[in-house]
Image (cartoon, rainbow, N blue to C red; front, side):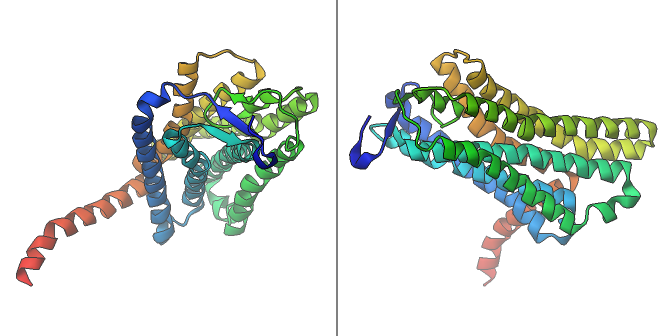
Length: 319
């Protein structure tokens, strides 16, 4: 522990052969971060710019992609600094803040997916009532709740653990997830119980609601026309793919903490990289290719750029 100015420093020891591959790691992660920012922001821009995409479904997709950008921004800058630093350390307060951002935004992800499932349920199962139910005000309230509810619930253990005493100052991961609380001198039963409550509220209940909604959609679609089944598949499949992907990553994180699962350092490092790289890149790819309207706008956007680049030299010669 380094007690400069009464600040507690934690040594990060989750990297694999960092001295040997630091520049390779840096280039890969910087490239991934730029791709995450650009791909997510491009689709958000298209949704904001085109008025025909100002529907609840697309607004919710934009919110999910913004969530991915915030999630990555809470993690990547510190990783990039670590790759180029001689010592990989983090203050306990910064680590706690990263933990807070990591789990509050993860909770928001599940709640946003639940709202999206409800939106698809109303659109497919109650199409005549859709405009009356999914009004702009209703969508705004859902979005606020999806961000405020996890923030409020995750803030409680953040405050509770702010002044906890540490007996271990070596962290075996690379991002501050719940395994950081193994550094405390004593495990808090109150924190464990509260953590289970938050897990139920922000993960299990939303997932159960999503599965119920899509089961109802599947049942209604099966009994309806071919056109309805096609519409349900086009709009629901991307949401289900995102849900399955993110749920698998969440299960891994819960197993690490709750079951005290021992994972080899290299495996832990590689899976953590997947958590922070795969999901934020997966979202824009799925929505960019699977959502017909977004895919069409993307083709027009990049098609115009290629045309402009191709024609620019000729225009210069004529001038």
